[in-house]
Image 1 (cartoon, rainbow, N blue to C red):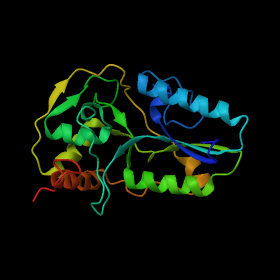
Image 2: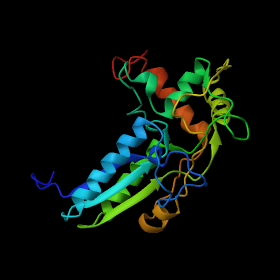
Image 3: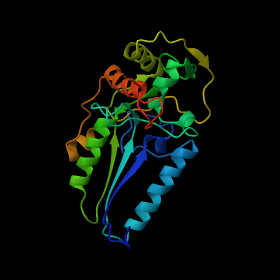
Length: 227
C-alpha cells in the first residue's frame, strides 16, 4: 500500500481478538487474549499494522466487528460463501443452520445455556465503514468496536429465526464447539462519541427476514435466480 501511495487503511478486525473477557461489555481497552486461530490471526495482523504505522503517516482505522447478520434491504447483496467455507461462516449463517435444525452448545455458563452474542446488521456495518473513512486522519490510528451493545443468546436468535422464516424449526442440541466463547457483546460508546455512529437496524427478526428473503431467491448464491 505504501509503495503505491495508498494512504488510508480501513482494517476489518473482529471481537474474536478479545477471547473470553472477565468483564462485559467489551470496550476497546479490554485485554485481547484470543482463544481460537481466527482471533489470533486477526490480532497478529493488527499488531503488524501498528508496528508499520510507527514509521508511517498512513491513516488507519481498525474496526472490530461483532456478529454480522442480514442482507442488503434492497435485495442487491447477500451472503453466499463458497461451498468449502459455508460450514464455518459467520453467525449470520446460524439462521440457515437453525432452519436445518442445528444448535451448537447448550451448556455454556449463560442464562439459558447458549452463547451470548452481539448481532450487528450488515447495513449498519457498511455505514460504520463510511464514517471511519470520513474521519480517518494521516498519521493517526482509530480502533473501534462495531456492535449494538445488546446481548442476545443463540436461543433468542433461533426464536427470531422461526418467526422470520415461518419455519417450525426442529432443534438438535449439540456439544459446545471447541474454541467458542460463552459470552461477548460490545460497549459501542467510543464509536458513537468519536465517529457519530450507532446501530440503527437492531430488530433481529427483521434483519433475519431480509436475509432469509435473499437466500430463498438465491439458492445458487449469485447464480441464476430462483423463479
